[in-house]
Amino acid sequence: MELIGDYHTHTVYSHGEGTIRDNVEAALKKGLKEIAICDHGPGHFLYGVKKKNIPLMRGEIDRLNEEYAPKGIRILLGVEANLIGYDGTIDMDEDLIKMTDILLLGYHYGIIPNSLYDSFGMYVRNPLSKVLPLGRERMIELNTQAFVRAINRYKIDFITHPGSKARVDIRALAREAAKVGTALEINSKHSQLSVESIRIAMEEDVDFVVNSDAHKPEEVGEVRVALERAKAAKLPLERIRNIRL
Ligand SMILES: [Zn+2]
Ligand SMILES: [Zn+2]
Picture (cartoon, rainbow, N blue to C red):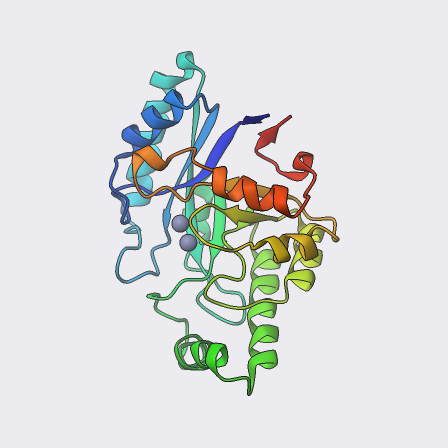
């Protein structure tokens, strides 16, 4: 069994510790064939990538690809975009999306929501629903719907740590994700997808990915924890896009 690529790594362009080159070097040492640089989307006011840096990252990655192609590794530019509205809006414009090779979508705090309604939902209702049962089901429905709208509006390769920070109806999300070819991530840093969520999601026709979510170069390619959860759920490993058996 071989990990082909790690498609979720952060660099100094958001709040990772390494440069793009540092992550590539680390990936090369681990024998990966591909690595994606996916810093946090620009809507994150603490550590989102600056919009003006995305073209610079594109240039840097193009140059690194020329340098590293003979060594057998390909570098992809991506972004871990943020959901910023319940209508499925994400914090990436079409012109920025065109510059990327891969697009991830996650739910994070610290973003600037699209509207007052979205702010209330994301910063008041959603956290409250985790402690108070009242309205919890409705919140799960709204969160799930937001993801489903987003994956239908944009070409999202996979959803990062689904269920982390915002509860979702994992079965419904898996079903809709399968229809549009979006995979669900089993993340080594976050406890989602959990073993139980994987078991539910795998009953639908959806694909999976395992990623490190590395914030330091030495974490690149470290997917052991994610793989253990996949195995505990008895997920057939051929359903994981970045694993070759
Ligand atoms: Zn994330
Ligand atoms: Zn991340």
